[in-house]
Image (tube, rainbow, N blue to C red; front, side):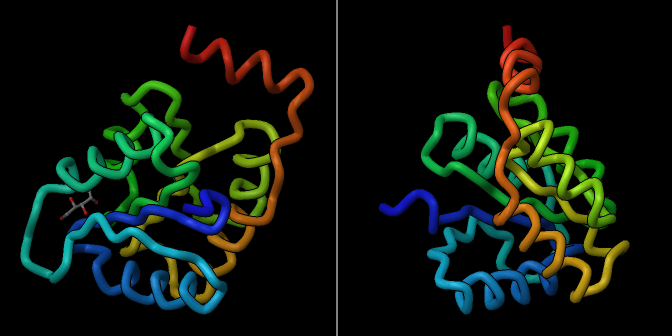
Length: 146
Ligand code: RB5
């Protein structure tokens, strides 16, 4: 599997529609997308889907993931409990950029009830394109887990 061109995505019912749009966006950009669910708008717990994606990033099956729920808050809380996961809830472009440059975020979290489709696409693109700056930031992120 080409890890750089593979990504795992998960959502709850509140962001199912946006997840489907993001999947199409990512496919068009040449990504292989692993869909961890949910697969329709029936009410589910964000915790189950957050755990699936966070585990896959935590154990390095995937380098990066995307999680979506209504506000993004629940998914962030779940994902950031997993070792080596640095999940960033973003609704503006500057935060998305900084989450990669300084924090080496490996999961982007979006609130499907907060942001529109175009902003979501732009946030994802920044998340994918922006490298980690390393240097002094490497010591900082490493010490999160130690
Ligand atoms: C679902 O109603 C909602 O609680 C969930 O999508 C998320 O926003 C939780 O943090």
